Amino acid sequence: EVQLVQSGAEVKKPGESLKISCKGSGYIFTNYWIGWVRQMPGKGLEWMGVIYPGDSDTRYSPSFQGQVIISADKSITTAYLQWSSLTASDTAMYYCARLGGIEASDPSGNWGQGTLVTVSS
Amino acid sequence: DIQMTQSPSSLSASVGDRVTITCRASQDISYYLSWYQQRPGKAPKLLIYDATSLETGAPSRFSGSGSGTDFTFTISSLQPEDTATYYCQQYDNLPPSFGQGTKLEIK
Image (cartoon, rainbow over all chains, first blue to last red; front, side, top):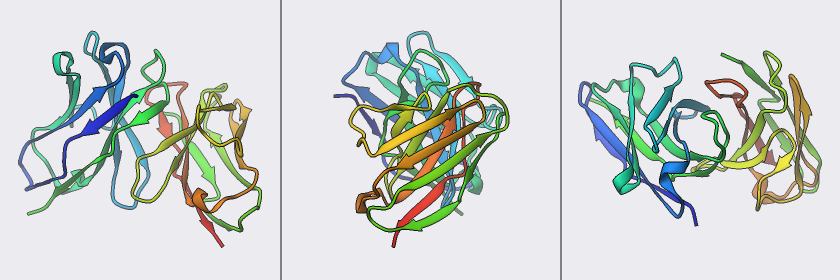
């Protein structure tokens, strides 16, 4: 069974750094893209970017390029989303998702449970 | 970026009703469209991909149609557990983009 298990909720102050994780299991981790999706409170879904753990090929939405870093450690089948300096506007639920096909844009049939990030002074 | 516009933004219907949601792309996306269901407090769930293909395990009352720029998602007989927000997503071009969502409530 494919599973994506995300790290727990975080409460941070503006300016702090953060790295959240998404551990994949039940499939060959290096063979599928993993993406990140943001959902701000009461709002819709926003595609942030994806990584192919097999060769670390990474694609970002222009809206998030330079704002976050997506990475992966295939030795522990884990993908990451990180910020160097958080702001209040980063407060959101963040989902990781495994893409179903070979393209970086393919739909996602498997999702993590979400990580709530709260940034407040 | 391709813009996706869903309508309506919300609707209320009764158990057993046929419900239809539409999604329009700002440019031709062929059949590269998916539909997701997001129940309150839960992660999204893929229901339809390639505009018309039912995801494994999704109930057969869900269906999709369309190609090019105009797409439709249909629930043939609404069930109480279908209370959720539904999103379309294009994946013809990077970045994939979602519609703004349709919140479906049961009367």
